[in-house]
Image (cartoon, rainbow, N blue to C red):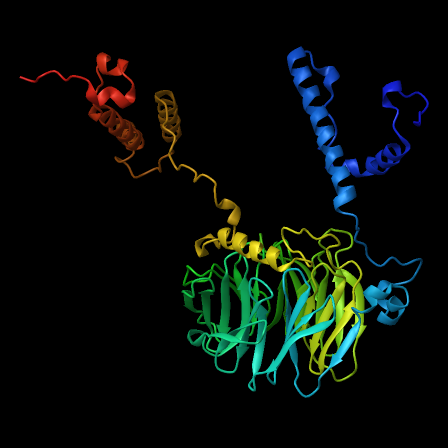
Length: 537
């Protein structure tokens, strides 16, 4: 049994389920269509008209297939807080949100208070399921955020400044008092990286398998974790820096310095790729947008700046100070300072950030790290008394790609992914400001030869310009017509000389080229060297 619409073709009768599905897909088709269709009625060429009509039909079929795949493969949709009338979204607190959400989301709101071991820093793996936390007093732990269970915790009995996951959740690196150490998930020490020295910040480049660190002497180190080889050891020469971030688009490491500058580095260059003055005072925090084109920096002069990294110019300046910054997968910006965190959003998608949400903690807590959890609407705050997790609607990507990050992957899938990522590992030479240049052809810098007519026209224009030259009136006897004509002739010859010399050089080059006989010319280029040559007397 089918549903038949008025004024519809008999062949377009669809079953009720298919009809309902097609009605849902119609608004989604606009996203995948390639603009407005071509007006084929104005074309007179029948062959071109038929080719374009087939092409337009294929575009429509592919758009419908993409919209249908989105219906089944991307069931969840992201969204932000919606308010009515004069309500403001930043006035909605976490207590109001918790009363409106389900039980599974409610477990993402929690506070872990460990006052004796803080302040705490943290890191997530690429899927967002596992979290590694490190307390300044030596407390290290790995947690499963899906089951809210503790996998492993240990006490290293010395200062820990930073922690970062490596290529998966089985390994993590901790920047301890003297050297950084690499541990596995069971807490077993695997490596002590003594060449790095006393490290302040750590970052891991997932596509290149490089562990980057900056120590207290301002030395930047790159180490390949697959072979254990030290790829780069760079003296920045800009002093101590504890602000370090990696651009996810190109793998360039950015450092914030006490002079207000931000420098960008790659392991194969001893000089910075870019050195830009962002603030008049020290840089206190920095973060990159997931697309790699936007950068947020905070300075001690109480200003947060949004930069376009492609043009190296300021897009927006937001008043306020931040000790920690982070961008979410959907582009929200979290700025933490003291016991208060603010979230800014580009809700109009015009690269203009406005206040979206805020959260105030217990007075006296000092926020040192803010980090959005991937694929969840969760923001985790590392502070002086432990860590806290709050809900930020619209911050995470609602649909995950199992080829990129799978929160539910098995041990077999993890092993296969590890082998695949090692095969796809990028060499350190591919780190550059514009990685889209890789695989393109280098432009040929050949100067176009001028034709004889163009040279003659250029010479005529130069001669005409000289003919109109006005001479100064000189004393009696030195202002004769013959002397004026002689000077004008000398000027014309002086203008012609470089053009004539250039033409003479080109003629000499042509004369030096060996002439190919008609017999050799008849052969293909590859066989001309085998042609019989006439014996010279």
